[in-house]
Image (cartoon, rainbow, N blue to C red; front, side, top):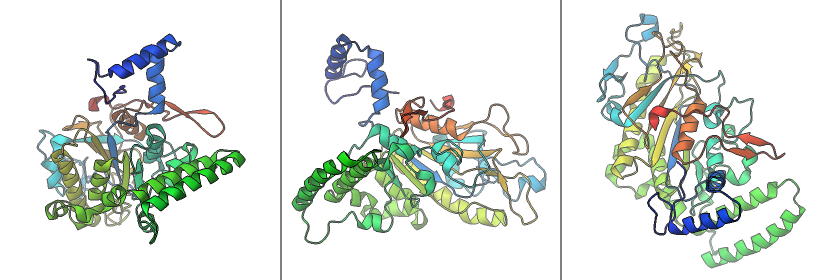
Length: 419
């Protein structure tokens, strides 16, 4: 997945002649080609066009009433909803998601996803339990791939929740939040021109040099980088325009619907060059009235996923943008006395699309959706696959603030079916 791809003329293996000569010079200096590739992998691939949209369903969505229905199970397990056939033979999903059924050949359903019993997005955002503080997926991507445009590499529409903490990647790699004041701050203050902003940026850089001289743990350096990125965003209209869905045609806005504006913003952001976009939608903690909630929420999600995936493919971005939708765990197979389902980390789901082989189901749960059959799939496996999509080796390490090497993931097996 890692290539040395330049803008100049390419050799047959995808390496530019300029890069090839550079590699030769480095080899003379004692570095082998393998050494160079390893170093480049650790530095990331800032020019790569790949991106990820992560849709988080807070509270833990039910697998048994969405993508892993059990029509042959007893009534107290199978529930009130029925499966429908998709355009992929043998692949069934909930009857409340007919739009996705028409594009199932572009989707992959992961069943039997095993997580932990924590009401937190931390596991799906990092691959680790909430007790283990690791940087969010987007922060890692920002750290490794760097800033490639006037837009931030990592944008969150989840109000910068605690599970998206950059940790030891540094404050420069925390997600940009476009909500409220964050978006307002992208405008130039009245009376301040672009040239004056440039002068202020130069002054800030001079002051930052003095501050860094007094800095001990490097935290100021991260803040300085974040400030510089913010100034670049203000100076360019590209960032604000990317968040403005009013620039879209009426037809496109109607495709997504007013309830799925976040999906449309996410598509606009990755199209503009953002590497990772996260958003959340709905409330899926259905301890009571689970089926009433599903009848309300699933049609909206169905429309959003259908619109996003269809739109990405129509714009030629279907292979470049990976989409994942999931929550922190599944729900209990047995329906409780309140017509709800409780927390169930032993079996859940993830829905994936884009940049990978679609039209398939990975993993399987038992007859009651209670446990996975065979080797379980974990959030780490999904995240490793997303790292691979971005051209990042999931076996890389980042040094924490004390200098200790920390693997991106402890479990680094990718989903080979999605190669």
